[in-house]
Length: 75
Image 1: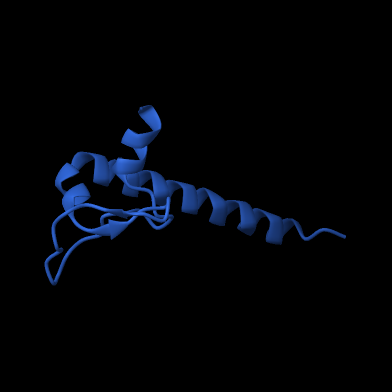
Image 2: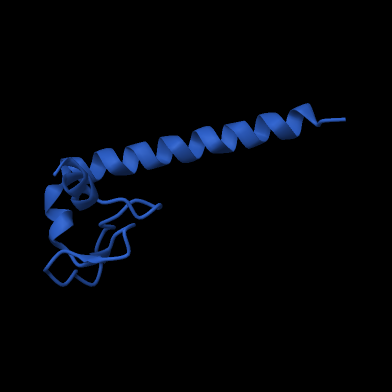
């Protein structure tokens, strides 16, 4: 017998993860200078050209997406 509460919690976790990813992508798109900081993209390559400061913010989302991947997909 399936656990309806477990299924609901699983779906809520998935919705939360999608929401967090979307908000991280939006923040990175609104702060394009973050793409200039050195970071590993989801494609496994090193992106950016500036060393990050000691107390830096993230240049990628939790899944590794960065605006550079978006630009590469459009070309």
